[in-house]
Length: 258
Length: 258
Image (tube, rainbow over all chains, first blue to last red; front, side, top):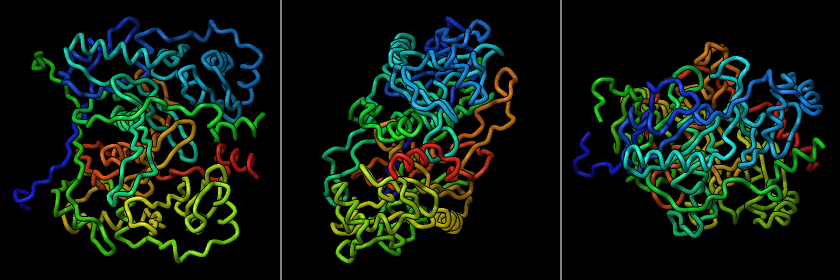
């Protein structure tokens, strides 16, 4: 086919999965390690799995040191979970949206997920990772680190994998971000016919996080970070989470399981 | 930096937003149009906005021809919607999960979304588009079309934009797909420490659909299709939707709003 007459002005985004990083341990400088592995460019978006952020920052607990309380023991029994594991889940939560058949909690950062996102995979047995308590601050620190080590300004998204309503399977979500706003806002934009749009908010950080999760894989592929090059910047706002009052589905869950 | 000693074996995926297509009308051959605009390669994944599939297939209704029934009129009044629009919403639904404050319905294909995904943007005033009743079949037809016009086997995902629980903003979701399974299954896989994974299902078609939606934009950018080149194939299964019995959140919604 001859594209020379009217060549496709196709947008081209390049996606790089960063492999070959050492196994991340407490104290590691993730930004420095990524920069030594891959040359970043200004405007890149770097997505990083929360797992390695938690490992580097030491957000871990040893289950043998946990004394489960009454609520954790009760919920654990109903869910078939380890009570010590459940205690960590409760410790990380600011609110319990649902106890059974699975435990859904809200974290201080606003993220709602199953079992507070506490994870016992990709760590030694008996250790659990918990999500960074302040993932927005972690994203900012990483962004500063990339500026320091690569000399360029990039966007950063920290991702976590979790489920969602109505559909099976987990997908990547954003829990922290820096250098961008979470929501692309089309308020006031017009469609192809010049009509004012009703769909006005797109959760771009989640769309990017989800695809990054696809590139990362879940098991032993060893790709904890992804670089997206060529994404067109967007405008909008940072209110990614519904407030408790406006969250219809959350209210239905707490109402139906008092 | 010198990457020559241990060059990053980074996975590289290329993303192309397909612009420059004509305004799609009833009877248009989307696969042929895309192939005349962009050279596809074997293994590409082509994501296509449901909007243009519905336009090409004539899945439209004229609101002036709709006679709203009692239920549509009642719900429309409570939601501040046009009763004729609401009747189309009910006509497309096989189940109503929630009536107010927003109408959440299940389509015959299994997709659960607000107002049955009925859309009055990017069409003439007074016309609405409804989602393809059989998006899996539409995806298969498109895939066959790409084989016919480009001579290569590609994957196809048809995308719709909709909201989700707990978080603001809409994201792209898959409603039909062909040449792949919806869920990547890690059952039995081990993590970096050799432990059997508990997170076993990843809804890859949704992660790809979400990012494609980011590339497409929502308003007047005119990018209704995206090509992803270099995605590593995956194995798993096709059960993307929870059954009614296992869908805890759905049950909570219907229980709390009888």
